[in-house]
Image 1 (cartoon, rainbow, N blue to C red):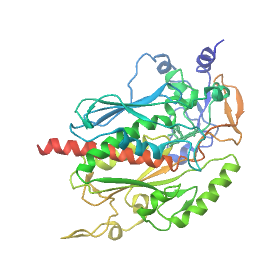
Image 2 (cartoon, rainbow, N blue to C red):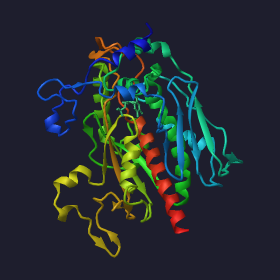
Image 3 (cartoon, rainbow, N blue to C red):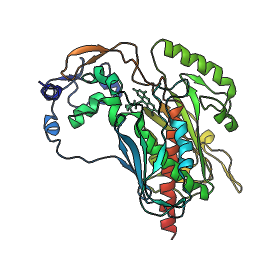
Image 4 (cartoon, helix red, strand yellow):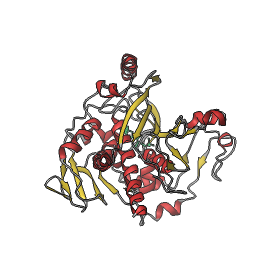
Length: 406
Ligand SMILES: Cc1cc2nc3c(=O)[nH]c(=O)nc-3n(C[C@H](O)[C@H](O)[C@H](O)COP(=O)(O)O)c2cc1C
């Protein structure tokens, strides 16, 4: 019997779901939860799984500046197609490479040992260093691929990763390096983000991401000039030593950690954002939440606003502008001219050496310990991805505003 057949057989069985989650406490009580005992998902959507002939794909982002990322972790290459980039924007591979280098694995203290040069090639859409207004295709070859390292994971689900859900949804999963759920997918986002950044720079809009927290170690001040001077991309030099110590400790234990990334966009004029469903904050949240491992997004004061009084949280307005920026530069879903401030909460890397309980694709209980080449934290590599997603969101709204104004 092939593992695929084994898997399909498995679909007819009961799969444990959300063990330990107090359905009553969360208010989340779908009909297939049994109160008072371990919740079991009955295969009530068996019909859905047998109807895998249709697909409503979600690989495209943006309305006017549209990107489609393609490729898997251990495929031949990975990349992106941009449609809707204005013509005559200066664009070279070198400019894109600078952003890709900040995302690249194989470098820093938190990074996987996978060594990829991530050398970008622009395949179409430019002439003599200028965009032509036609689709821009970019790709990066996957070179340091060791799929055999994933052989043991082929028939297991890694807790915290997308193995279980990809298998359930598609009935097939590229287990080599995590396939499309791998951080390699973000190569295309960062390459496209670099192009978006070029368009935004014409309007003097700049976007920068930095690490606010790593494994519970936070910064106590913000000096953007520091961000490029240390391996964690923290704006506070005094936090670096403690972060390095924390990483070493976690790595030694075979575990992983998360953190918080902040992204600031300066120079955004009032008016970007399309109420009601395409509010700027709503789209930024989507953009960041679409990155693997991002589990929360805050705008401006974020969750802290819920603990403030109105008199503390409101940003008073003077004839010279707003006197504070708890709103994070967005009111009513529209930019207000203040810096856009957005934070992403990043979970710990799922693939860890510490042994954990899981199941096989045949629904047999087993244990898993993931050895080999994995990041200890998505931070700081994810910073470049967060920056890219904010650039892509802003450029799309900028073009939408231009259409409206014309
Ligand atoms: C920059 C970056 C690097 C990552 N590196 C790894 C890694 O080495 N190993 C791993 O298991 N997950 C890694 N992840 C996280 C997974 O991609 C992610 O947890 C997985 O796709 C499941 O999605 P979810 O966490 O959003 O539910 C990384 C994510 C990012 C953004």
